[in-house]
Image 1 (cartoon, helix red, strand yellow):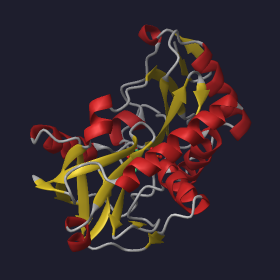
Image 2: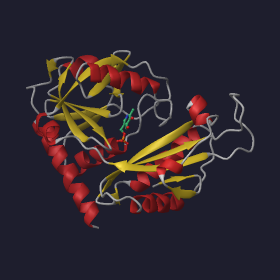
Image 3: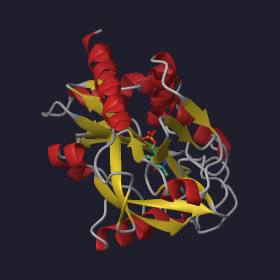
Image 4: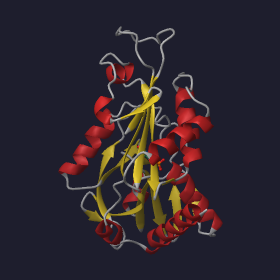
Length: 282
Ligand code: PLP
């Protein structure tokens, strides 16, 4: 069951116009919320980021935060599995014309589609994953969680063809982020990540990792990171709502540090799991 434009319905009955601007132009934004044992994790933060993405593209938010939260909870309750990934998608709708400027008086398209949560495997958690690197050829508003995902499609396909889980991107010699994750670097016991700006998505997991590092007194620097620093790092992690904290142990075929999951990756993953379970018990 999913939610489309005001009603819950079986997925097979949910249809959107072929002339929807989401389909024609990728004119919309989205969110992905992890759900553990039917508890949506960091729901308020995801709804707030959705509001920020909508504001950035000049699309009026169709619902108040409380209404979004209620719809997400209703969608979760309708599924017959416990751990979910809830996809939210809002487009500028359509008026049957293919014209670039915003149309007048057109209702947005709103979709809420839960699916089964696919987490990293036990082996990926224990042994880490491999990544390739790539020039960051995306636009200059990567802070918007936009439906224009062709770069992500191409980058993740390149990673898949290299038998890798992620693609680490550099722009002008500096680390930006992963194709669908934020990247953290560890050097000499210090955790570092690039600052939030227009070049990266303000990750919900990124924020939580920073919060956990600060709460537990781990050394942390938020600053621009050069490609050379990434390539000589002791540890590299990717973070995202569905991958959580996942160590990258090989970059472009070269081992990262010792080539095994590092001590700070294990520590942060432990802190993350503890936090998650504590929140779920509340
Ligand atoms: N950066 C990009 C480009 C992403 O697509 C994602 C998630 O899909 C992230 C970072 C991680 O964001 P979050 O932790 O909110 O899932």
